[in-house]
Image (cartoon, rainbow over all chains, first blue to last red; front, side):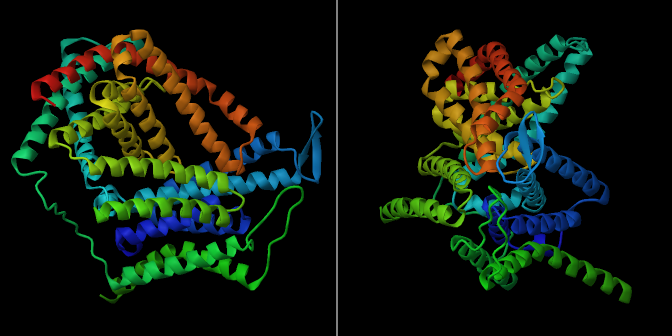
Length: 293
Length: 225
């Protein structure tokens, strides 16, 4: 990972917080469409083309589904397209559904980017200062999971070799699962208390507590953080003055086209496209240097 | 001391400020915003109070181990679709290690399993709901331990509560306010999952509570926790 993902995790967290907050809670089609575009472009740098294609198909189906549900339940709006069982199916409800669909899809896409970029080690770095004990539990649990999976495999292989719980019936699977889980529990509890004793013996809980992190806060991080804060503030101010209000019912209101609202749209556009530009810039640099060798 | 006062002042100013500013900024979707903030703050306050107390290393490792068991149990039972013992394990943990451990295991299970699947706007709600199930199970620990019937009723109610709360959030998020017909639609469309969920909680509490409970009890006595 280079480029965007190599920024300081706290800056990344600030970025995703700001973009998700605006996407989730602003009710404005322009904002949602910009956000969808930004999230899909960033996602395209993080996944393979094949996975991207299947994701896009899933997103399209999801949007259609949300539109359909909205048409069934919302009969507000002034422009009926046709009547179904005596209920009007309105144009406004169609657009409202599309807006909700785009919003949900872009939030899901952003969250997918977030899961790819803010990995568990970065997550621990972000919250390690505020909640060290909770993060310690998180990191130990993350270590226990593969350990327990392996142990589970051992227990269940042993059971299979003895010829118990190996049939295909549901009851047998359930019984086998419960028995293995029970065996796993006693082994893992014992194991974890031993770990705790070892920690205590090596001085866990002595003050002052120190922690180790490999992430540095450089000048780049500072600049990006400033940009994120500035653009977010522009959007939030514009929204709190009502410049970004958009209504679907009873009829569709137009966009407000004052300087402030246009500035807000541009700011949000730059904000959402920023990671993609950073990635593309790094990509071009990489290829350019290769070709000169 | 100064630190403590500072924290309280910060919390008592910051929290209402966030809510008020959020309502001013996100005019159309203030209910969704407030509900998300409440979920995050509720989890945050609980985590901070957990940090304030002194915990022995053994207690921390046991909580981590039970969280890992809850997550691994999802994988063990993945061949049986929708049939997961996660909630049952959270309830059993709370029965033997108290409300605090119950909340931690519930919230951490939601958080960590979403690292494996996908984080999303639902994460804080799952954390809070599973945490609350653990918290409540810890409060009623004595009656849950002694009476099998209570345990099963609690398991079923926990399943229903989980679905109903998650659907409330879906409605708030899509509509911006509470739309009753849509809520009814979500409830009915997720009815099948709710029933499977509640039923699996009952089944797993029935078969897991005694063997796992015995082991937790033994560990508690053996290491004097």
